[in-house]
Length: 269
Image (cartoon, rainbow, N blue to C red; front, side, top):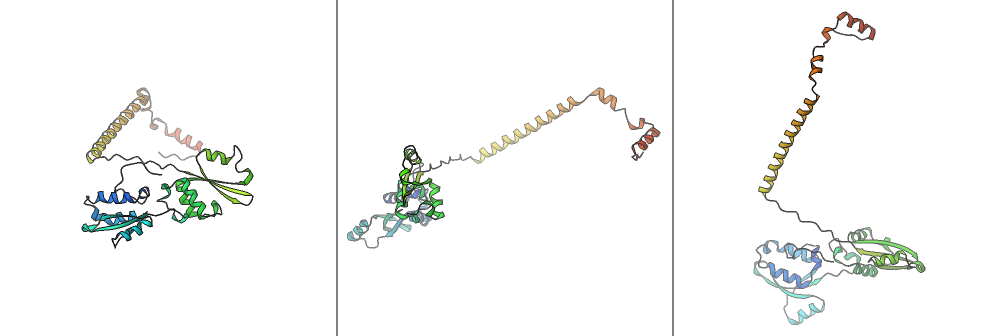
């Protein structure tokens, strides 16, 4: 299961995508980076990333019989140039994923569903729920998992869940439990593709801010214009003429006092 994207180099190698490469790729990427000035400053970081997926042994005795022993162990031996021009030989070997304890958040997206089933089958027999929660969480990060437990005779009946899951591309692990069987279905989750954001220059940002400011100013002017128009629409000259001359001073104080007595309220003059 590999991610699509730009060509790998030591600069963009991570503890996740390093699982996509093999021993010969490590030597190739290192040879390319030897011409890069930043190799010396970041050499320790690059080695740490490589070690997350590979075992690295320095070959201290460079003899054919020693090299042969490394190769018999599944290692690939190659030459690398380290800091200050030191040349050494490494024996590299990809770390195997054989046990459930070998599964990590970094490598779970880089194994197939078939490989996952092999690891599960090799390491446990108690069913999905017998797995530690931490292992379940790692697996669920990279795979769709579903389970069912049925009488063995009914597990694979035509049109049943087993048949539908297999048709949908799920790998299956069957765990016998007496006359019953638990089926664990696993299918790789698609790796989300994150779109690259376009890098914007400082001048572009300034121009964008200026345009935004102008837009905001135009919007405020438009709102003020609309407000003035609304106020003009609400303005009634005849009503103003009539109402502006109607004041409380036209009312007889004695009438107001009598009205106040009737309402039971105090009125101050």
